[in-house]
Length: 194
Image 1 (cartoon, one colour):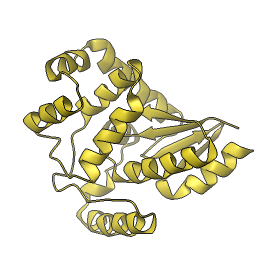
Image 2 (tube, helix red, strand yellow; image 1 turned 60 degrees about the horizontal axis):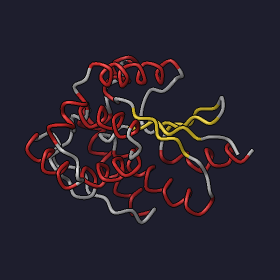
Image 3 (cartoon, helix red, strand yellow; image 1 turned 120 degrees about the vertical axis):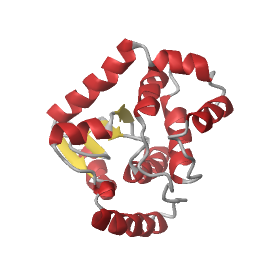
Image 4 (spheres, helix red, strand yellow; image 1 turned 120 degrees about the horizontal axis):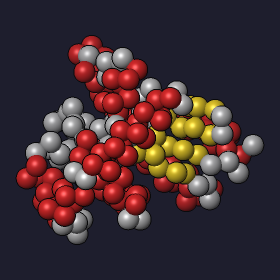
């Protein structure tokens, strides 16, 4: 069975929907999915793309579409009223969480905070309180994410993803094949089984 790479950013509601489906699929099929944190804003900048959520016409459709998808997959979902979310610190934190061995729990908690509880993760006080609830010391966390090596790591991963062809999130890479969007997971699984 081939490895599945899942490129994501907490700011992406479609990445959240993909994450919820992956959890269920991994549990039932013993698939191995590698979570690949990137900065979606950085990818969009490199690809010269305006995020769909920042275009008023597309945003209106996107919110309706997300609700349809969440209902279809029976996933709890609430569009974040503080959108767009600035997740640079959260995604740097994902790098720290990966290095310290708790990336999946970290990702799960932040996706839920953003797309179920609709927390204002742009507010540092709310972010600090949230980190405390995860048993993460906010000042130590801020120290780690402001380390130049962590900053460079996220930037390098984002650039590397772009060079592989990633232009948005969620994106999945299986071997030499790339799939974009949470609605492509069936194709991803099929490719991984080959």
